Image: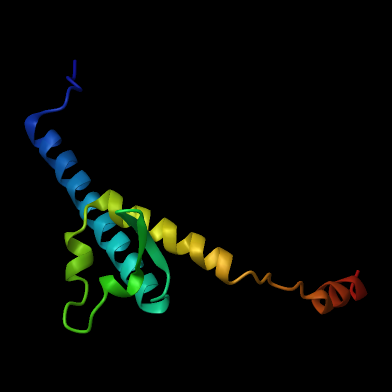
Length: 113
């Protein structure tokens, strides 16, 4: 009878796979935030309230020519996700265009039926 229980090396391999996935996700999120910040520098990423005043922090504050991604990499993962969401909301509000439907393709397709 064969024993199917996992051994220590199985756990070690599984743990290494998970660490690799987390590392990859971290890099993807960092790159996404960096790209959004470069392309949409005026997008607000957070609002800080200080003594009754609202201070709007923009994406431009995260990217500088000398720093590259270093500021973004140092942010907690949840904060990076929050900033991505804030920039995406700003983009949706700012650029309210919709893609038009390409009707000539449907007409051509109808001709061949």
